[in-house]
Length: 171
Image (cartoon, rainbow, N blue to C red):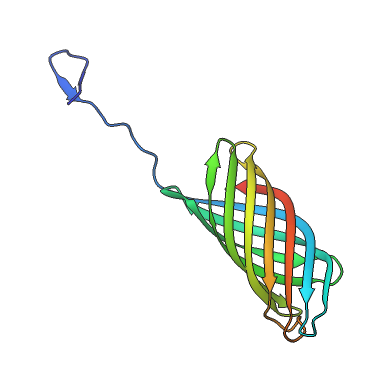
């Protein structure tokens, strides 16, 4: 046992262990925008390639200090180029930080609900560059596969690859 001598040399006191930070929940909000490429096929055997409508995501993510590698959250997504649509994207990500750079591969479900319905899985990779204690620049690449919804012709699928850029604020 380490001993610390007090003001009087005759009274020894046990050393205090270093204090650990309190466990806490962390939150971040982000604003990103992007577009990409959509590839589609229909039951009739025809296929097409077109630019994905431009979109804006407002996202919330959360993680706990005791398990910072597991990140959950969701986005409110709005297509704003051409026709307008609104959807939600619940997500689960694995986070790995090296210095100021954070990589977050993730899985999500994209569900557009207004004015049409369209749903499918999303795989993504987000890269965040920390700009201090409050903000990060974000770049993301996402691959979506849509096969459910009234916005698709019968027996058809849409595959899209999208890129996005934005900023995150750490609360």
